[in-house]
Amino acid sequence: MELFDLLNLEQHIREPTHDGGHTLDLLVTQKNNSFIQFDKVEEYHFSDHKSIHFILSAKKPKPSRKTLKYRKTKNIDIEAFKRSILEAEVSKKVEACASVNEKINVLSSTISNVLEAHAPQKVKSIVIRPNCKWYTDVLRKAKQERRKAERRWKKSRLEIDTMIGSCT
Image (cartoon, one colour):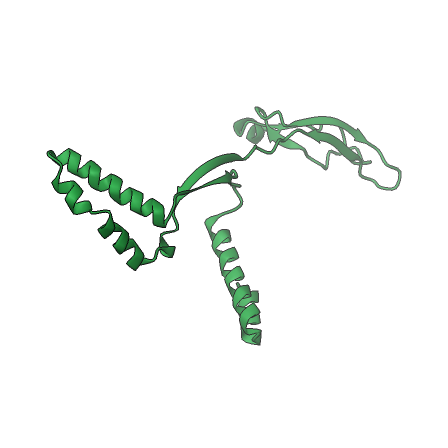
């Protein structure tokens, strides 16, 4: 009981859970957590243990959404991109500017327009799920390795790839 007090724990079962009059089963939570509501200890005739009834009111946190902006720059045709920059006559536009700030703004907006034409900006909304304490980096890495081995096996169908996948 001293340890429970030290760790701020509470034992919810206050009556015997065994026919012999002993409390064998425990239901322990932190005192400040109110996600559990103890109901009752009920006796069944087919066992020497009693059943414990309680209600958990743990709610799963709602996932949040995040908006990402991206461009598929790998799909740009480099030669067409170069031609578009030349056709935009960037150097003439920049030379016509009086101040350095104006030159930078003209250069930036012209290159941005060319980039938008070749790799338009796309918007994607993703769901951010809260992290689980048990889902560690080691587990995530092991899962990645297993999936990698599975993809390799699906391509090769070799027995060695099956054995590698079962070891990860």
